[in-house]
Image 1: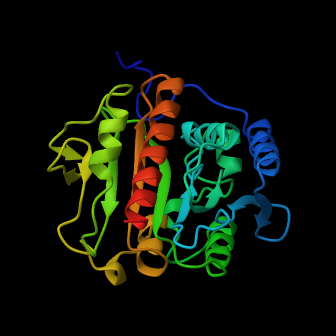
Image 2 (image 1 turned 180 degrees about the horizontal axis):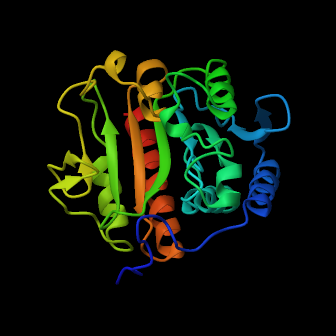
Length: 267
């Protein structure tokens, strides 16, 4: 499998029409018994989907998924649509946000319509999207697992970033092995400026691996790790490969992580 070689100083690959994608997400969610809502109040109206825990599943883990944070990363919303339409979920209670930046997707820009990178705005909350998101998260319970679906136009393959301060059993290796048959794994010694001690896996030595108070910009993962979860994975598909490959990689990763999380919960 060869990379496309389309990305030069940015993402120049395949694009998607986000509006029918979100309509399909909502239709599949309703068809399969999910609750369909939105946040914040007003015209922005970001979609929020909730699947209650299956009946009789008192120990069902709480799992949160988000995607569509950056408008030049189209595989995530398509993976969310496919997961919802195929409806092959383990026994978990699930919260799914299928697109946090629809304006960015429409414009094929990393930032929102106001030029703000939402994924650097979870400390100062300048954007309506981040403010509404944090307000919405404040109404939810703590999550056992959070999965953030992203893409990286510079990467040499799939990788994930793990925040696991309590050193719980890692899901990273399971996800990487599930992706390996369908998508290259980034085996670089340094990925996104951080050392990789296992192909495709980034782990900080300590939690956090920097002083949050000294960091001017917070991503969603850091906010979640400080407030809402103790096990977070940012999943990065390599966006210089065909879109179908990247969607498959994200779908496989989500399923592998959730299935292992649910299996661990009943042991």
